Image 1 (spheres, rainbow, N blue to C red):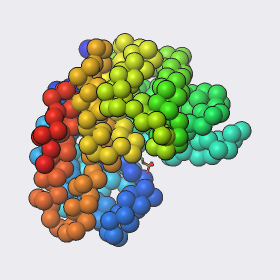
Image 2: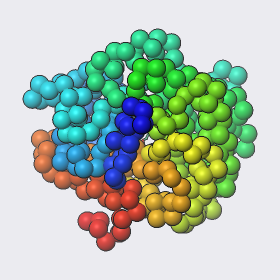
Image 3: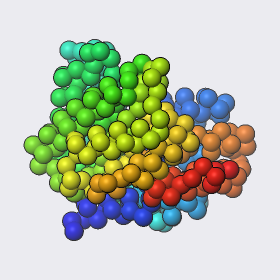
Length: 335
Ligand code: 5MM
């Protein structure tokens, strides 16, 4: 087994998943503003350290995606954050893209940037303890989007990123996120997501990326959040599986879904059904940001020194998702 494949399995096996705590300062400020906590480096660290030192880190969280600010911070006990995560039995990871910018040639779409100087930044992150990395491409659905240009250019960037990351002995998370914003049907989401993922794999293969040493982080197949034709959770699970079965090469060891704006419960329930019906060899797990953090953040904001209480909420959510990643969750386990 290759070293990269080994890392991938350690992160995702046995009901483990990923905590996406890589909100850039802008996004984290929005989240903190939403609960009336000032967005200072100290507060951003305090909330994150509270999660990273929770007991569920050992059993349920195989990896944590960090933002540049956090990977360089020290905990209240003066531990380096990547060391704290490793001591809890999880793997530190890092977001290495520099954000989605206006796509020249199709200004209503986005292209993710960050390739310039990436090789050097990767060396630095590796020394800081990162075992894996993340890069997110974003696509929106309208009648004419995502365009060929956005699909091709984002796939190309994702593949160049992934090749550089593997060269640096880390596992790249490939995150092509087809957004749920809009009034499109689930069928349209299925078609566009399939096209996006297929194109990503064409480029990954062209760039000689070892598919056994990556993690795919896709969206689930959902109707748009403004669509009148919603589908059931069963249908979400079945369409998501159908899409991944036909667009992802079988060498890929694991998939870790993003939550993409689903409620905590929806994200857990859909993941559970995906695992119930999973007839593929892919591990199907989670790499949730909002769906792992929302309730914990809300609770924490009421008393930012209540570490234990916040951890209890986070541990519960992590446990529920870990069960869902094994198809063992049920609604009556929720509190
Ligand atoms: C944690 O949020 C990440 C976004 O950060 P920026 O937009 O600030 O760069 C995001 O990439 C996240 O990792 C994924 O979208 C998954 O998060 P959700 O909340 O969709 O599960």
